[in-house]
Length: 205
Length: 211
Image 1 (spheres, helix red, strand yellow):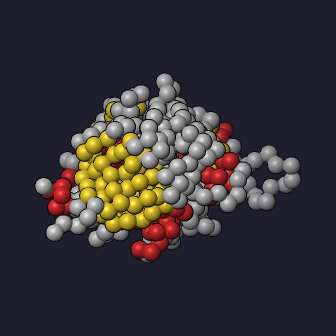
Image 2 (cartoon, rainbow over the protein chains, first blue to last red; image 1 turned 135 degrees about the horizontal axis):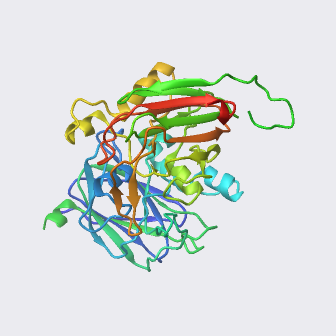
Image 3 (cartoon, rainbow over the protein chains, first blue to last red; image 1 turned 180 degrees about the vertical axis):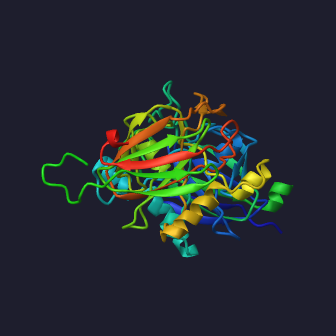
């Protein structure tokens, strides 16, 4: 008997923390389109080793990644491999929005933010907010301009677009449906993200 | 010294110079209002820069927040270098190099050993030792700003390491606006073309022409 496919909904502007095991297949879905999903992962057996956009950039020698590429840890080990991607545009540059993103940059107090969304669940694993790694911002769109600036613009993703990873290590993950509703990034309309975890037995079959 | 309306809260400090041997890391204390100058003393030197607050362990220089504060993948003159709390620490005011990296991680001893640089100390370990010596207790060692590292960023996102063309005497200078301890590493970066450590000089003064 195989485990059922596990599905989770990340409510618009909120976060979810979950575990995945090596051999499983993880899919993150942009339910309504134009919604960034901040994604972080920590190695289950060693919480000091984390998924790292910075180390992934060094390994892949690109800001972006393609189907077939792995995403790497702070120790340079592959943790996930991209096996399907209906969008092809993701960001690995922008730190998670946090309280100061809204208080300092946008003059707003008390705004929901990705760091708190992701830390809320990760705190149950004994992790501090400083232990939450830099995120991969799935579906987020930050094109490089001619003078190497980052264009601030909306995602190209449409309803139902998704990215699927082969899970290479047991991980604790968190996803935040980015609550940014002020600047281009989520189409000025924050919406749900869905997560599906396919059991290892089904992947093997 | 900043041109404040009221008398400054501290006395002027004399210029201070710290030499960073190739392959090592050193710290320099900088007070708000001072100039921080970082100079390559040998051709091809790269300076991996970190900074920490002495009054709040949880505040440190953040390369990631610096990129997004200016919506820029590269460091350019006039840009604010900010903390993880998105507050300005200093501004890149003088820059004879124009080539710096905001995207790549610090080396570790293990990474260097695996990539053909056996026997060299990683930037992370070297900076970690300086942090311990200073009694700083940051929650983590953040990613660095790699001054003088030559890496091209293409519009398709490709990151292309280039042969380093830093000349002896190239420097950056910044007016610092927050008291911070800077730690600068001249360790091997493990990045192609930028992997020959060179000596650096760190200096502080109230005004640039004192240096």
